[in-house]
Image (cartoon, rainbow over all chains, first blue to last red):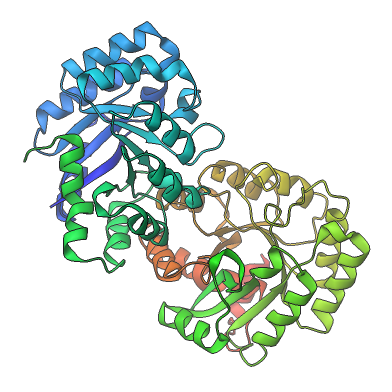
Length: 242
Length: 262
């Protein structure tokens, strides 16, 4: 079974569409997906996004885990939003600096990270867009909060492929999510830090699950490594028990 | 249908790579599914452009049926030297186009040599493909602004804006009839959107093959994973690149040629 650590949901209220996606993912062998709100819900309508995802998780508990959004610029309100989302069962925090308008190195995000630390929740961040979400900026954050697990979404794609392995080496609590990034760069990360810190992600709808699965399969990895990347690491990271 | 890749590189000494025999490179490209490729220097984008044009021309001398070599020039050497090299590349080396990489070659589109280079390439009938999608020197709209001044020259955004600037690339392509997009390295969902919103006759397939292993096969799989119909894929994979840069073995029928001139 595959666990997909990178799905963004654009139509959380459209049950028919969601049902169709889940069926399609199942056909590809994806048994569980880590889903985060997208677009306006990731940026301004955070509460709406979190609530819809919590509802989705309740409806499909075996297939979906949700990530909470809370725009750091909302200050104490964001902290309350995040606490509430975790109370409702969401599994981690999703940061999207280019959409939410902050740099990963700004202390404005610290109050949210303190909540994640206290509640033992991982933090997934979009990376790859300068000047706000580069792999080394996330590594810097990971070094400041060494007890939180951070996930480098899309592996710095497109232009920061050369920073992926150096960033992973800097912070042992930093993991790589594979969507969009080139197979050769994922291999470099494997060579640098081994198979325990890499998570499969489809990046849907930015990318497509069938293509992303094929990308990993064509790397010719040993079965044990493949199992870790496609499922085991995600189960450990997100605390999934299936 | 043979797939023509409009964005590949001759491996050189740069980026931890090393040169490889062209016969071996061709075999690898063919095994990954190509029937032809536009081939650019790699080493020439980080220095010694003239020398590397010679190396590229020599490498493909016996493989002109498969490889269409693109020269590069160094705008930092000034317009006069760049235009002289364009003439030499076209007439003496038989180059089929121009590849520029503002980021690696460390020039901005406002460099005074750039407008003459664009215009002269157009006069010589050479399409110009540029790396794009990477600010601050290679943003899609920076290139489009200069393309507007050379409307007779075919300008190809070599990465269709990558993932951060694909929206800009779409706008540039829709606004300027001389701008083509090479679907190279954009994520699958964005490729779909580009195909939906841009004139299909100005879209090309590209992979960056030769730069890293196995890029071509995955790039082909990515384009095939989109919802684009087979007729559209045929134009992107085959017809469009051949209409810009014909290869000896690949002839377009009369009917198809007329289609492109509409």
